Image (cartoon, rainbow, N blue to C red; front, side, top):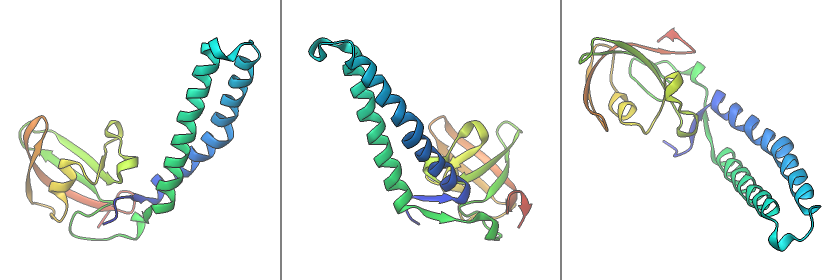
Amino acid sequence: MSDNVMTKTGYKDLKEKLKKMKSIDRQQIIKEIQVAAAHGDLSENAEYDAAKEKQSFIEGKIKEIEQKIASAQVIDITTLSSDRVVFGATVKLEDEDKGDEVVYSIVGVDEADIAINKISISSPIARALIGKEEGDRVQVRAPGGVRNYLILEITYNEGRSK
């Protein structure tokens, strides 16, 4: 699987972020540079130096995002259906150590956000889940230690069961 695999939603979000950076952030930086330059001697103008550094950072991020978009392998998860966990799956797990249930969606590296239970395809949990079926037990070696999970449900198509 490509290093830059992402869902259609993640691709759309990345394109929107790029658009914002080009149309809003870039213009804001230009104004900051103009204001700082108006203060006079640029050789000792910390405000100008900071604005130029910020501009360099933004331009670097724009190039990085453009490269990610250009090399993206976009997967439409609404077309997926499998008895096994694959990229794009939403997996309901029972944490057998704590007795809690947790739901994770397996997404691309750039769209992962643990705060909303989207985990990267390259995360330890996702790597342990890939290829498994409902009812399988999975042991995950994570930075916090070994965790044991039971796969309760695998869904695709934005929450509909396989």
